[in-house]
Length: 255
Image (cartoon, rainbow, N blue to C red; front, side, top):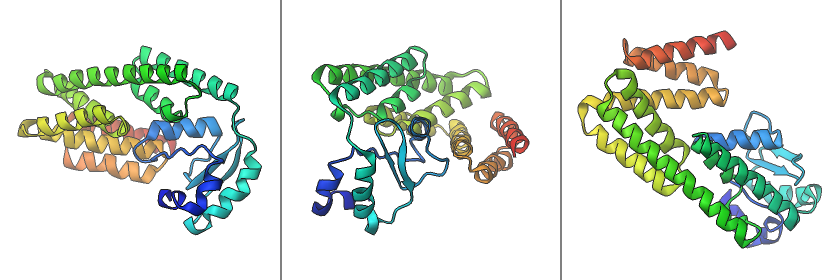
């Protein structure tokens, strides 16, 4: 789709929109933030068009060859974009929310909150600087957690602690893909730790648990169950198997 949007024939119509691309499988927090903000249905369509007041005017799958018509029509429905004052207010609220999340140790949620408000769209230099400072805080919090998680995997005195460390690294690497330094550091540490064959299974288990959690959050219940069952089958008697069993029971109760 992005290839189509870059073509000359789309230039005029695309200029009427603020384009946000959310990877539903890897940017789960941003996906959920979008759904909450714009009341988007659970199924993730290819295109959402939202008005500045938060009302969705289009929320369907659109084949690429109809993209120009879809955007042209909905540009009228979406109305005028945010005024500078409204944009400044939206950014101010997002930055306050993100900083509050960092203060409470929820740096991944903070990162995903800012993902909806890229620095390039900041309405003024002051807001751009605040955005940069907040992003730096998120990065520092993530880096500190990576150090803690790595230490848990290496030195944890119980199986549960080592699994926790491996899982934290998987989550950071998976949920913060667009924060390059953080993703690279987490991925690098995972690869380094896996050279120790005694630790490899922790990451296999953590990866399956992470994928299962993601499937459950997207309400792909059968896929989540299958992944949890895979943990039970491949890693019997482990801490990961206990956690998979508990999550599986929760899904069974809800379904």
